[in-house]
Image 1 (cartoon, rainbow, N blue to C red):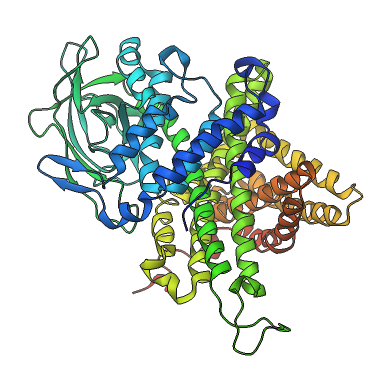
Image 2 (image 1 turned 90 degrees about the vertical axis):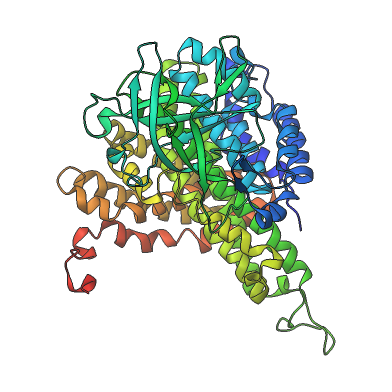
Length: 589
């Protein structure tokens, strides 16, 4: 079974559920139409299914390789990347000023889902490049933009994000990489960075590394971090490549999954100092990097959707083909067996995979549409509202969707039974690949902290309450319909939103007076919020789609998944005392 992008479902979710159609014909997207969106997606689906998907298993088996000459990607990756570049796929949402097509971020996010569902190890490279494009577009100098953006947007060059160091995981206060001014506008960068995705490879002629480092007189902590552009090959004034920079991969990490993606240990300055240029202002690098990280967090959430969709398609094909047992009441002849999809428990698992996948897809697409609205909204107020919505949804999109990716991949293994534990079937790879998603680009625990401590208080809680009110309108519309199934979906959604209201009230009431109580419940609160939001979007799809399958899926979600919010309310509001002190008997030696 190979992956086939569900273009119609994706386009429907993008246009009708996430709301991209509301931005069409206005502002920056005057020429955009649902037909154009679907035609772009159909073309991308061919590349995903015919070129990238066949590389998933072979890339996993071969893996990226390190030698004294650098890093090589698995067979077929470089050729696939060339075809990806020739198709102009890296330029979709980039600014036309530097060769981009100026299309919505939301459309680009949908395409990223395709690349990553087809082959997650391949899809990681464009994600990092897109983040570098975002950071340079927002914070780069004119010279940096002119020299780097055309090549990054075209895909001829790729980009990376260099944050983590051996002694500093998610704590950027502990970064030690140094940047020394040279008096000519350049800096010499020294230090070691780890977990650098596509830090070196043989698919593109140059790599633009975005590196966090400290100036000699920088203040301590995150306030003393600056961001630098450090290319693999120096770039001449005319845009041609110069000499090799002192930025080298010195080893590859051996990982649980994503074997085809090189995860590099990077050494800067071991031969005298890597030459870099400052992005943005000195000691303001974190603000610049967050432009890149916020983009990456949404795209990692999209990777969760991607792996869930691929695992679902794989499990569905197996369930239709694998014959075992006879359902109760079957009229099969003695000795005959039925496809396992006829067994109720298998159907339940498949429906769970599908419902969670569609819910997380809608959340990610809605986040992307909000980002587009922040740039292309018709008025200043609409742009500000859209930005606030994007800020609120980003940690949910990243965390909820990547957790779903892992859970769905695990269910896929279960559907395969014992064969799911055997690499030969391919089901295990989805689970291995998915497991990194809740960890990188800010662990899901960090996303929960971000949601509760930074995003929930936006507008004194009005941003979150406004979204909950919007979800209430969906529930009201469903309950007031003449359709018995929709009425039940609306009632279940209203019930879930009552629980979300209680949890939100608790968080907003205690955030200043008892912050640790809120942080103790942050992760279950995020899961509660994401689960309710998923119910809202699936109900919206059922209301707007006129499709029996969407109605059935929303009904299944309302009956089988939405009720989980009630069990999450207790953990979300139990407070820090429920966790016990670190020196309590629970953690004693």
